[in-house]
Length: 420
Image 1 (cartoon, rainbow, N blue to C red):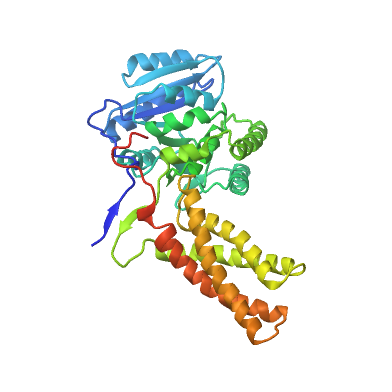
Image 2: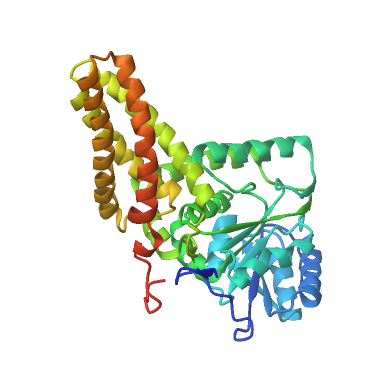
């Protein structure tokens, strides 16, 4: 029998019966007097007939200079579920932060006023947030199954931007800028104070921060038709995005954004599975451990050769193994066994050094035996060390998995823990 126990901080399903407004959809607008009313009426009709819970539509006016605000207020007077927020400054990010920060809804969403995204994607966007399965949800024009109609120029720009995010910020989501996103309100309250961009980079900053905090981002492939009347300044937006990437890279590297603390508060840990005789995620762990092991072995051999130029084999082996052992433990802690944050890191390194000592005994013993039997050259020493390291690697994996990083020895919060 398999018993699966989530971490106590795992998000719970939203009580859709106990709250009046489950979903708040924000529509940021600037000088949209012509397109605002048909957008709101279409969205309102869709939510009224298709969405089974209480909802609100919030029109966030970014300092429009035409009659957009008057149209918005007229719609709010006519439709009970429509409300208006006015901002004296422009900026989509500023509008979303303001509207989301003051909302009492359990799920916060936004979409562009042109409704380029088919509204049929709204229920699958929101459902995993209500169930507790995910923390954020985004519509993706680049995910498998999406159907998109737009010109080659915008298609190229979108794909290049997302490749840039993958290369610079290690983003794992496929579409940062699709104007169709949702987030759980409890998660938004934690993340929004650390998202500073007031304009188009707001989406990217929010998603990168969420990813690094260990949150789950759900992607919905969408049907999307480009709006030919879009007034987005592509060049200015691209320059602002590049500045945002540089700022975010610097902030996360210097610790200005408390990623580790957010991960401890919000991050989802590995599922704990207690099945006699069946280790959790063994194939995945073996692959990752092997990758770390290959990198560690190459680093070890290179370092051994460099040190061997100035010292004998035994001290060269000791120093090379010690340096790579620390890096190996750190990499396996994060990549192989999915342990993040600083809690328990000191103990893990100490126990990792114990494992290192056993590996040292095995490799040093092999060298000692080799020198007792013959007078080897460097090539033969390397061959013996490779074999000894293979045996030490098997021993290391068993000890790391069954002792150092065993799930039962990790410090999970108790059910009565009042931390978020």
